[in-house]
Image (cartoon, rainbow, N blue to C red; front, top):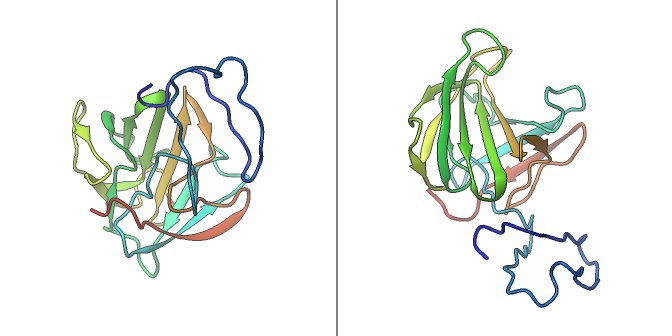
Length: 183
């Protein structure tokens, strides 16, 4: 099937098990990862840059990730983390997300990119993982420049996972670098 939609079954790394009855004898697609996550998402910045992904249990929402590129994040390029369609380009002023973008992806996923200094896409625009969508800023309720990033599945925030490695949850900082589909 396309876009990995429909019934699914998840296995822990290294686990062995039979497919459940809803998947047996189906012409099903498979998403299998190696050296990282089985996610279809890429880190939202160019290859060759190291970014720290920070998770905090007191973050709102709690499964969001804040990305920082030291010593100064301001103005760094932000890319779509997967192909999709831009559904929101908004500015909440000095509150909440500030300048933010939402992209709708296959399988019920949406990604959120917040606190941007610029938004370089428009609603309805199709994007790829090589499309620059904006630049890191410190808008809204931000206390300093960073990229606030969320992955949502059917409206619920989920742990962010990426093909090239994923942030550690909760209350951790992980250095990550995009290595695939380089813009």
